[in-house]
View 1 (cartoon, rainbow, N blue to C red):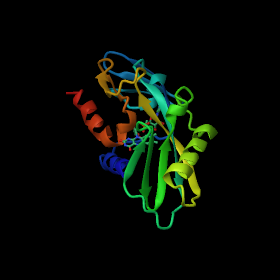
View 2 (view 1 turned 180 degrees about the vertical axis):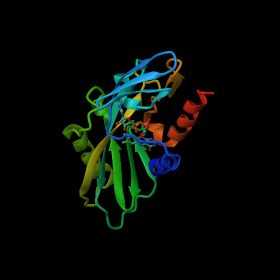
View 3 (view 1 turned 120 degrees about the vertical axis):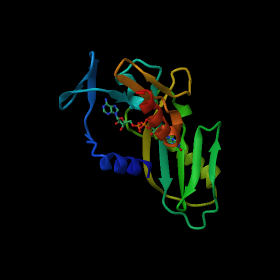
View 4 (view 1 turned 60 degrees about the horizontal axis):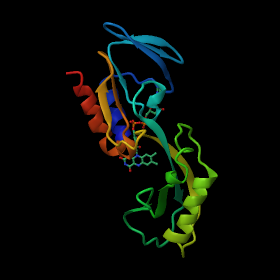
Amino acid sequence: MMMQALLKKVQSKGIKILNNITLEHFEESNNSVKIKTNLLEFSTRKLFIATNGFAAQLINEDVKPARAQVLITKPIKRLHIKGTFHLDKGYYYFRNIDNRILFGGGRNLDFKGEETTEFNETEHIQNALETLLKTTILPETPFEIEHRWCGIMGVGLSGQKKVIVKPLGNHVYCGVRLGGMGIAIGSLIGKELVQLLD
Ligand SMILES: Cc1cc2nc3c(=O)[nH]c(=O)nc-3n(C[C@H](O)[C@H](O)[C@H](O)COP(=O)(O)OP(=O)(O)OC[C@H]3O[C@@H](n4cnc5c(N)ncnc54)[C@H](O)[C@@H]3O)c2cc1C
C-alpha cells in the first residue's frame, strides 16, 4: 500500500521512473553528478542513494546486507492465533494474516550465510522455520506451506541500528541502513533526505 501510494504521488507529479536499471557508477563534478548505468549514461543535478542493503555496492558506509527468509501457510480453518508474536530474542516473527500463519526469521542460524544480496531461500533456515511451526506454533493443527520467499535488509557492520541519512558530497546524499524498520520509517527518511537540500 505504501509503495502504491508513493508511485501514485510520483506519477501525478510527472516524475519519470526508470525500472529494471542498475546504477553502476557515479562521479560528482562542480554542478552535477555523472551517472553510469547498465543501459545508459546521463547527468543529474542531485543524486539520492536509497539502496539500503545493496548500498555497499556503491558507497563506502557502515552498512551490509542481511537477508530474511519467510514462509506463509495456506488458509487454516479455526485458526485461533490472533496478534503478532516474536520469539528467541526477536529473531523469529509470526502472525495470523487472513487465517494463514506468516512466519519469518532464523537469520541467527547462519549470520554469515545470510549476509548476502542474493534472493534465495536455504534448506537449513526454511526447515528450521517449518519445524518450529510444527512443534511450537501449530503443534496440533495440520497445515500446508503455500509460499516461501526472502527479502534483503540493510544493517550496521557492528550491529549499529541507526539509519544513515547524510550528504556524501555537494550533490550526492544517502538514506540507508533502515534495518527491519524501513516500512515504518521509510517515508520519514525520504522527508529527511529532501531536507538535506535546504
Ligand atoms: C522479511 C522482512 C520483513 C520485514 N518486516 C518489516 C516490518 O514489519 N516493518 C518494517 O518497518 N520493516 C520491515 N522490514 C524492513 C523493510 O522491508 C526495509 O527496511 C525496507 O524495505 C527498506 O526500504 P528501502 O526502499 O530503503 O530499500 P529496498 O526496499 O531494499 O529498496 C532498494 C532498491 O534498490 C534497488 N537497487 C539496489 N542496488 C541498485 C543499483 N545499483 N541501481 C539501481 N537500483 C538498485 C533494489 O533492487 C531495491 O529495489 C522487513 C524486511 C524483510 C526482509
